[in-house]
Image (cartoon, rainbow, N blue to C red; front, side, top):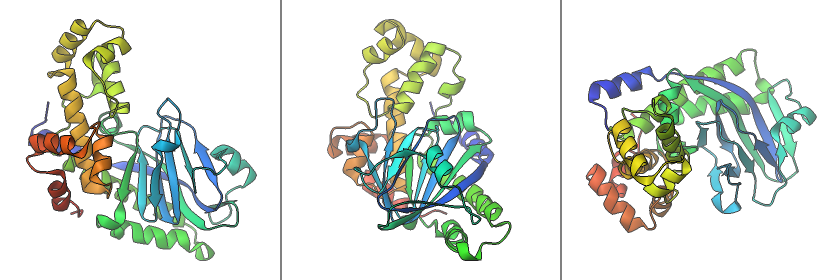
Length: 317
């Protein structure tokens, strides 16, 4: 289930992000934009202001699933998930493509959109990795990194300076921002994966040779917090409970619920090291009903409580 040190080192060394910065968006409240699902991974960096984010889980973008983001937050969407960003949950939303048609990017690479209220500055882009089938498939649909709490200012500060000073924009600035983003995102992904401490599965679902088992694993990866049972997973892929359990173990090496538990806790470990999300929220996103159950499971897996784990891994090396 877990790789040895050499395999993990090889995987981490192979991560090299190539990014493209689409635009910087200066958004005045009220504002809201929708981005459709696409194959390419995406990112947003909130340089100033605040917003809410809703991810399309395939079952709608309920307001209750909104994630609050603010200045200094990096949002990664490794699977290219459709999503909505807006200043508040009641603001009107338009497709980003339509916004760009009506409000073209200006000479400084900035889109100006929205009303006359408080302003939010966001950098939007896409990225890929040299080992995207392995690495990005392992990641959850959305990751929010609190850069202020994790020593990431060394990457973010020069990007902020370049992006904010639109009146002094020089030829080549966009390319410099993209190069800084490459290193920035590579560093973030490596830290997140290292913080999951060997929980990366040797058998990645994207490379699984059993298509039905691969489908079940994809469901676990995309809807991790759902209260899955063996029976429910088996129904999703059109198999009997006993046949599914046997084929999963033969293909992956562990039982389905064991794999799901390891996946949930590994993602929680990465999130603890890179975000300021309250422990109660970490528990909910990991599929646990309460913080106590989550903490006990985390201690069994990682040998220490979630709070201590976070404290020891807060700063990027």
